[in-house]
Image (tube, rainbow, N blue to C red; front, side):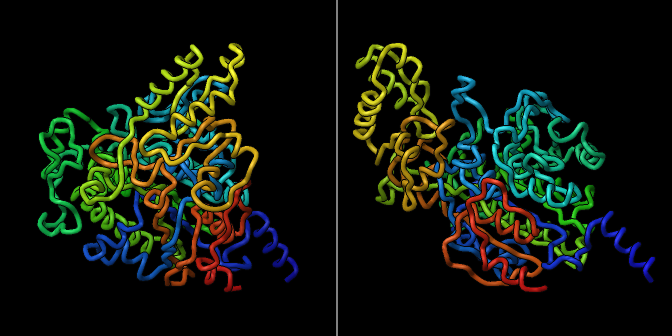
Length: 549
């Protein structure tokens, strides 16, 4: 008997403790789903047309945190994905935008770029990517550390930043689609892997992008039933290059001659091929099949690209969500059939929302407007030259003015005077509600309202010197389509749905910050919080997870 006990102890020391020995039940697998540019109201607007197995399954049988918000500005894809998985805002994890001006490098930088790594699969120009600029850990890193590398973490998205920010520094791999060339491949970088695994190579050989792009995009349902959207041809919608009008059907084989493989991202089939690749990863990596919990982070990017082009009220965006609903149902069916005891948890959220097209709002007598960042930058440069005889503007990005402080020092120009003059000029512009000096955020702390969200997105080393706050409904974009980036509710209010083993069904109406997702997962995994985490665990999610000892 004593010999048997010794053998059992040695087994656990060598292989880790099984599910039954943990104080709290841990899922075999967590699937994190981020839907790029998903407004909360898309859940309800298209409700009657959703299938029973997709969004309805998550809401009817899971927990709907219906009052979930991003707590910072700017609300973009890079910081959105980083914040979901790091449990902190850009002020702490450092991804202050998709792109920002680096004073250290004296140039604009991209959130995922890394010249020290190269492509694995795909093209060279799409492959120099890593999480190097993410300065904190995230839940993926903490899970890998806690399990001593035995838990697997995989990030998947058409966009590299949508895969990399969730996979983090210690993830096994991040995979993205080559959107910068004509390879039509899923790829990674040498930061994560030396070569693509066999299952990924096999998937690329299927050339599914060719299959999807060989068809005409027609509505999934009879077009006359899309009553939740505007008519098919409106002045609020952008059109594909090569099309005369933004209307169905969209001839993808013809459009491909202009766009090639990147076209798939601007169609609902970009979501479908992402789902296909995620299912291949689940099978190829054997995720959720042993005692160590795994994490699969999937981001659906086409919702954002189609949304930018057609706006929030187009039949095209409704069709994208109806098709995504079917893709989600297929994923959930696979999980039911393949994860032991259905011991998995899914959460679904978004990286930001989107506003209605300003012209659409104007036609409904709702205040809104468009502003041009290039024109505004030029006017600031002109003002500086008139006042001080010098161009003192490095750039105007992310609603922020970056000043050339080195030039001001050399020319003995008073920085405070420059800021005051520029602030007064900016406040006189249509749509500008307020202007904040970076020093205000460096020396004071705000805990409520829009100003706290602006501060949460501010990082002294990476943010600008003046932060411009535009009024609700104002957008720095074209006359058609839509965008995002503000601290207003249409950009911050997003879905947060939880479903799976030990998740109690219901509705949670209390305020939730997007930064609360990662610490909730930390409790679920029994691991440490990400090291810059500022969020709090969501008790409603954990009620059934932590009570079963």
